[in-house]
Length: 153
Length: 264
Ligand SMILES: Cc1cc2nc3c(=O)[nH]c(=O)nc-3n(C[C@H](O)[C@H](O)[C@H](O)COP(=O)(O)OP(=O)(O)OC[C@H]3O[C@@H](n4cnc5c(N)ncnc54)[C@H](O)[C@@H]3O)c2cc1C
Ligand code: FES
Ligand code: FES
Image (cartoon, each protein chain N blue to C red):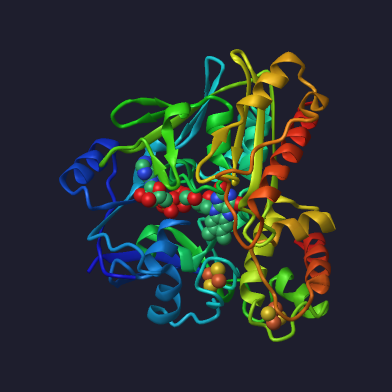
């Protein structure tokens, strides 16, 4: 079995896993980081989005082996102790979630989009979140939260 | 997903050797098509060769009037490249319209072209701009590369190294997209090149193709009006839950006119 090593939320981890292990399985099943969700498992919904070397990717559509040597950030890696990341805080403040299932992926995509578009318009936010599906909110409050967070990031 | 052995060669020479020794192996680029295929157990390769560690397959260069893009260059890198935006803005815009940001962060030009999905965007750019596909064995003009639905001129063990796009005088791509996946229901790239006008259509047929009647009309007068009265034939076009063959034929005309208008 190949040994896969990477930095996850600042900590170096190393595990022997089958080559077919997906990054999302590596995170959830081998590292017990269950904040990253699996919604569709068919590359459509974005519930599984994490950052690999600073870029948002669908962790259900990447092998753990492909992330060997990379730096990975998951939803668990955002808060500083009790202090939420500005994007998490904005989602809470603006009621940008109902059931919360899509929220980890939505927040990871939103942080990436604000990094690339520091002052995004509503249109840009909606376009950039095309890879994230929410079955509850109707998106309006998510867009509001991302806009508010962009101002604080 | 069935079990497989994973390889990560560090050079093109090493990758070529690996695939030559095992032609049943699968090359892995961005994985945005291959991994879903493996998850559905639609393929069972004993070995997977990841091209992600090969530096010589990455990057964008402008050389002698052509934009040359390494096979492992991600869609997002092409979309945001200042060089591509300057030399062939239509190509940057096309790459920026593929899928969603997460697909664009992993998906590659080599993977897209090798896959020859009937609804993919890059085949329209390759054919419409008259690109040349450089492989580990030879150079293939786009006109000879896309041979059918999910079929290309690539031989067993042949690896795409880079794609060279000659900069056109002007070009634009317009697609009528599936709102869920952003794949093209119909996409048309129109280019005025040094060797005449080229019109490439994706999404409509089993494989990307050139609409030669439109090329002839635009060659006489490069204006959307030149296509008035010209109808693409519905015979042999794709029909599915999204659009009938007749509707796709109609969309070809609409997208072609919009693309000409967008050329400015
Ligand atoms: C949700 C979603 C939406 C999408 N929307 C669009 C869209 O709107 N438009 C669009 O065009 N595409 C779309 N795609 C497809 C996406 O662009 C893929 O990235 C692309 O089709 C395949 O590229 P890849 O790098 O991921 O290749 P992979 O999946 O890794 O490989 C695909 C195939 O190409 C072969 N291959 C890869 N690289 C090479 C090489 N260098 N030489 C020879 N063979 C090679 C592989 O062996 C495999 O058979 C979408 C995908 C998803 C998941
Ligand atoms: S679980 Fe990965 S995209 Fe839905
Ligand atoms: S809050 Fe329920 S899916 Fe988005």
